[in-house]
Image (cartoon, rainbow, N blue to C red; front, top):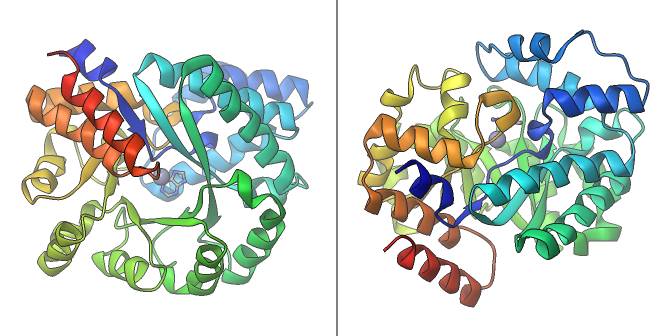
Length: 332
Ligand code: ADE
Ligand code: ZN
């Protein structure tokens, strides 16, 4: 079952590339760019990864990202990630990045996008993984700052797949971002948003109604609102669920208590992803395996989750069908 979970073809649709920064690379970039860290050793960094909730994680995540400065840094980060993804059976990646985290340190949006995009091109050639970039707005900042960021990115919008919304959810409703999402959609970009991770089901509704998102990132709190569940089911609106993240950030006390099976039983289009794997103790293969074990998922249920990941992705229908067929024939 371990190798079935690890190797089954899958799409990674909820991954923050800054959240793949392993402590070893953090130290290497710290030396390369002469940016001091408050940690002395890799073990010390890992020991600091005990979180009480989303905000306590974000504080350390934004701190780690400070070592990323030049285009090759972003390239190296994403290239290291694709190597791990390939080992986990990943065939498609739709990757989040947070340009505002870097722009406030004087790094241009273009530097970030070019470094990541080059790594995406290489991933196709080296691993046969197709990949796209989703520019996320930081929701603790203003709607105006988000619009400014989008405008800076539009000259190279052909390198982008879509826009997303992340960072601290509580107290930062989707309402703030109605305009910037409308503009992004008018520019032909896909739209997704984190909603219902720590925030209430109303934020999922608002993200659907106001931001017109095509996919909900996390969304696990939707079960508190039966009418919302019916709407998500009816519209086959995907939820990108991150089980190990949810435990690390105390959305659930333990993997055994995760509501993934309940989401599946409700007929929702859920899939498993890794969020910030360098911080949460596992990449997508580990998320599949740990969840399979904790919830005693059958092979057919694991297969359904993998198939859902391709249904939820933004590839053209013909490619999605081919990938789903690969899942169906895998291991049988
Ligand atoms: N940024 C990185 N990981 C995140 C998460 N799980 N929720 C919101 N913002 C994030
Ligand atoms: Zn996330």
